[in-house]
Image 1 (spheres, rainbow, N blue to C red):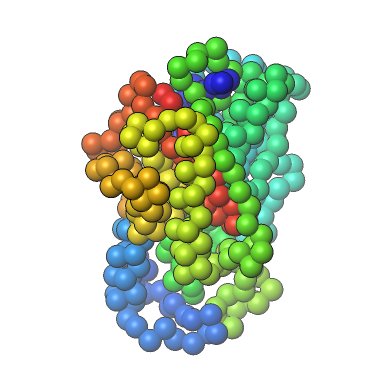
Image 2: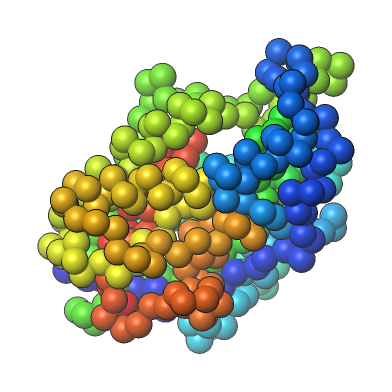
Length: 354
């Protein structure tokens, strides 16, 4: 039974563009500090062929994650047409806190959700603000939690945000640094009596055996840098293999629970981590139903926006809903899937009907 739906979305896309050519003079190293053995032009060319990323966005120096989140939240509240004082929960998904430009430490005291509540000037003390750390799937997990609160009768309106400034936690000597970007996306989830539209089903998983540290903190590849300063690191190949094996199954679990036919799925909004990986996930998902992948079923924003972690799915959803991605749209009655994978290793999916 449907109990909640998304009534408004908003995003904040930073204005600073960093194109692939801007990395031509960087010095990329192997994990042991040795030279990669290839010219940067070739490294970047291979990177683009795999990830699809041509450019990414970075936040202005004066902004932190909670600032980006505030901007996106304002737009989501306006889009939903609600009174901000009626919000019962602010759920903020991130992984690194507020990282100031030039800082080597994330700031999470007070919580980023509290900071957004402060910036929004919400006076109602019954509006509860908290953060969620769930890797890249954090925003989707926040929507799932909001739906649970609504279903339990302890909330009617929730603000769910995903925001990150990954550009400030990357090792510039690691070629993987080219993947990451900054951004924020938000939505309002409200209780509904509409049995025709809303969240139909969802699925979440955590794999914490050897997969637990596929994404982790690590020292700079440049051994002359302070080895006590930590940066985001990942085992890319292992993540790829993990994702294409496990994400399609989780998506199928969610879809099976919804009772909706695979033929009725109009769009799949998947975490913008890597174009080739996303394509492989969707292909394997349809293969589980012995179906070909429909043309245009998977909107993409990674080419211009990169991987902004928790912000990719809400940003992509907002862009499509607002008609800002060419040849992509969602209309009333469409069934969509939201899906993500990331540090934990965590996976989740939501089946939603507009």
